Length: 276
View 1 (cartoon, rainbow, N blue to C red):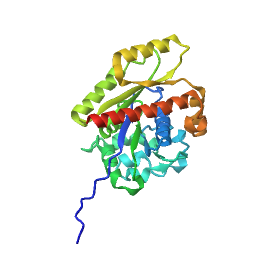
View 2: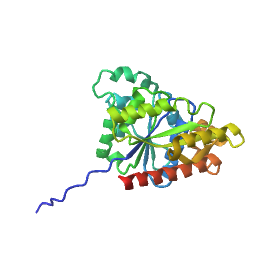
View 3: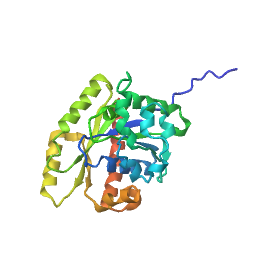
View 4: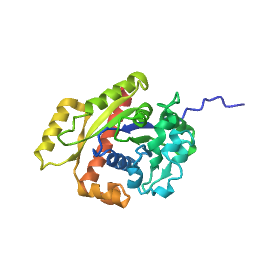
């Protein structure tokens, strides 16, 4: 007798886009180290490098010559995301690398009807790829612009995580990012939310850092994570060695902060699932 028990659908990984159109706010550093911290506590994580500069790929020790397939190929529809995925030195952490070809991807796909859904379609197909079995998180490292690439990331994502530097102009441009999130939610991805805002490069010796932190918390309330990422030399040094800070120096204050951030992200995710 044939067993008619329905086969459960594979679970889609939770997708978070790390986005801020300002450069130098710690998006890539946060993607690398949050991904490493999540992997360290048992999650299976894929970082999707969507920045043509490829800093997330370099920071995870993936040499440019070894990037056989990249996110450019994925967005162009030439390969699946699972084919572009590579192992890193961190158990449980994988990378879909970037190349400079991404600079031209918008011209390649601009005329396509599904141009804003290219990455979403690629992530949806991951659940059928055995190489990606058990994948729980996808972190998308966005370029420092509100371009079609970033729109692809937001359309594919469940939530946006916003790194925000503790500097004078921190809130400048944030309103435009929030407006873009609203536009994507209205027209392309109704489930998209702001998962949280993480304050980066905090210097307790600098009065301005404290004032910026207070202003951001007043403006955004509980959207701001409790965890604050300090300005830390060891975190800044780590990418030049092709390592996440957590591998380079686990005991430094920056690494410890990213471990706390990972725990906080998971707590928020659990609360969101419970409320759904």
